[in-house]
Image (cartoon, rainbow, N blue to C red; front, side, top):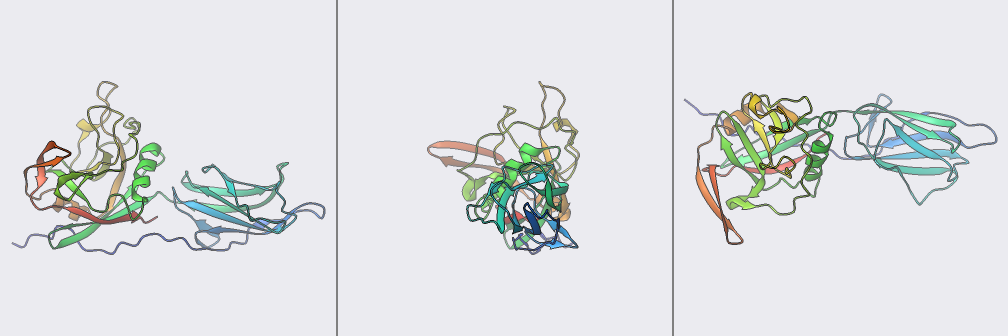
Length: 303
């Protein structure tokens, strides 16, 4: 019987930023500032600018009388709005990082609060695609993240994904336990520990998300607030990993697979063995390391 390839080949389309102009509701009076156009990048469709969670959005305002008193906000919110130093009475440019999902609204106002223009933004749940390789078999899977119920964890994960060409590129699925979970994100080829992780994050296991099959959660030590870059994909319903109480805080789920489930099923069944590696004179034992390395070769935020 033919065995399925480890991972099904699939293209990885990474999101790119392009500029799109949107004609927005706007106006002014004869004695004050007026907005004739409000533009947002990245692109738009059907009058809605589709931007990505965790990514910057640039707002360009055109009109007259647009002095330094003009302000722009995104409701329900974003990171600090930054005004470009290159502005004039006819153009103003603002930039911020989106930290909300759903139907948002850009509003341009005078310092006194009079609205000059508005624009709708549609921010979907973020998605991350990964490509992995084992021997000659390659393929991909896509996970959708939940910044509503696990905001700190999602922000942390996306920081790694959007670092350079992706922090996880070149890291291994170093721990695979059949019918339990597959863990990655902390070790390179030869089981050498990755460097450059950010600070540990607060555990968000009490968020209503359960460690069900195909969900993605953060790995950690016995210390609750110790997760950095390592994550795991549940191979079955692991309800024993959910939050119970402060003495049994569980593991924080922050997303789920939306494609590539078959590939991940095969990954979870790869042969494993006990291996060891030495870093800076310290030996580390891996009880469930794949015999043939399973390496993440590409990853990126796709929306």
